[in-house]
Length: 178
Image (cartoon, rainbow, N blue to C red; front, side, top):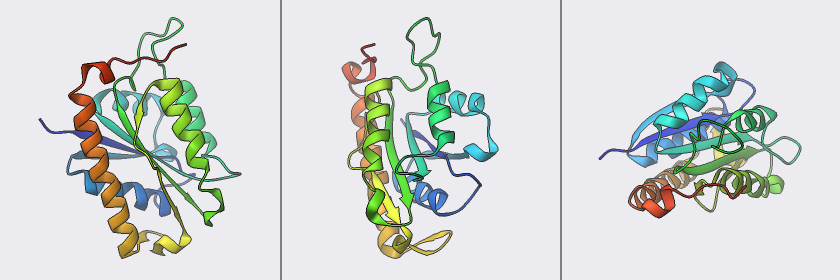
C-alpha cells in the first residue's frame, strides 16, 4: 500500500530555502507527495489535506527563535478531536520537521515544534528534525549535494516511521491526553 506524504511550507512567500528543503525530504520518501505553501492556501485546504495524508512534513523558516506565525495559526486552527471538536486530522499521523535559518544558532527551535506536534496532537514525530542554515544551499532554491542527501535520508526515515505507525493500531489510535 503506497504512502501519501504532505509537505507544508510556512514561509511568508512561495519558494525559497524552506520549500527546497521540504521538497528534498519529500523526494526521499518514495511516496506520493504534495507540497502546499501556506502563503497560497487557506487553513481549510491544508487541514483537509492533513486528513488524506499518512505523514506531514512541516517546514518553516525560524524567526525570533521559533517557527512562523502562519504555522502557529494553522496549528491553532487544526482540530484534534477534543473539547467538542468534530475532527482530528493529525491523529494517527507521522510528521517530520524542517526548519531553516540564517545560522546554526536557532536549531533548538526544532524542540518547540516537535513538542506541539507530539504533545498537543499526539503525532509521532521523526527525530531529529532537519535544520538547515544558509551554508546548506547553493542559492535560494538549490540545496548543496550534502544537504540533498541529508534531506533524502530524513525522507527515507519518515517513510519507515510511517510504515511502522500504519502497522500499529496502538500508535494510530493514541490521542492527546487533554
